[in-house]
Image (cartoon, rainbow, N blue to C red; front, side, top):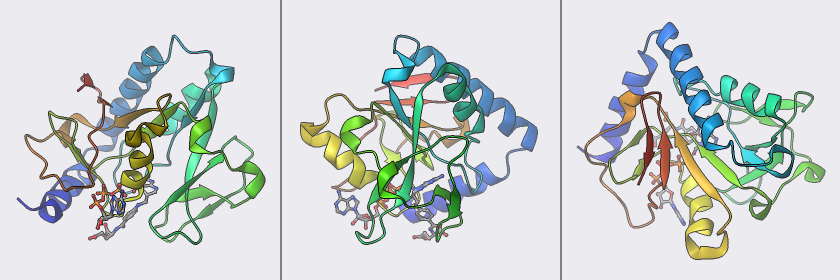
Length: 195
Ligand SMILES: Nc1nc2c(c(=O)[nH]1)N(C=O)[C@@H](CNc1ccc(C(=O)N[C@@H](CCC(=O)O)C(=O)O)cc1)CN2
Ligand SMILES: Nc1ncnc2c1ncn2[C@@H]1O[C@H](COP(=O)(O)OP(=O)(O)OP(=O)(O)O)[C@@H](O)[C@H]1O
């Protein structure tokens, strides 16, 4: 199956999960993530989260948990000039929000709230599908691929990318492209995958 068709198929599966199952899954993932982060000092750790859309595993339980524990959080913002690139901006309960061109919530652009990738320790990533080697299929914008490229170069040894997803998004094989960088970890309700 082509990447395009696989993306469409998995997006459909995601969108059709019953609301109840989505909520349960989201809480299970939040619990697993809490265990994964338990060795870290929250006040000294910045976690990049994202606001779910289009049937993605709801991230509000993750965000709530991180805030309760005292972690610093940032959200991706589409770069205003560099097409296909993300910026990360500080995110608190008081952050003024706006909708980007895809209809995803993001913080209003404000340079003072920008956090460079070098100051982020945990990068939580949305995904449409993943396979047993950690290969990731995203929404098709290449945004996180470009972010991961900076990590893969060895420039960011202290950044830990972790994909979040439903069990149903695991597939046998994702056809990979030259720019794809496999994920080291994916957390699903059923399992914490380490590749
Ligand atoms: N919650 C969330 N935030 C995120 C991402 C994400 O996957 N999830 N992104 C992760 O990258 C970035 C946004 N990337 C996106 C890329 C494409 C589309 C989109 O709607 N694409 C069209 C056409 C795709 C195609 O067919 O080529 C579509 O799906 O209809 C949306 C978001 C940044 N923020
Ligand atoms: N490191 C990179 N440098 C330049 N272009 C890239 C890079 N990574 C991806 N791209 C471009 O981005 C486009 C989308 O890539 P792909 O289909 O793999 O996105 P995705 O991983 O599904 O999406 P996302 O990461 O936004 O969730 C491709 O056409 C590719 O040319």
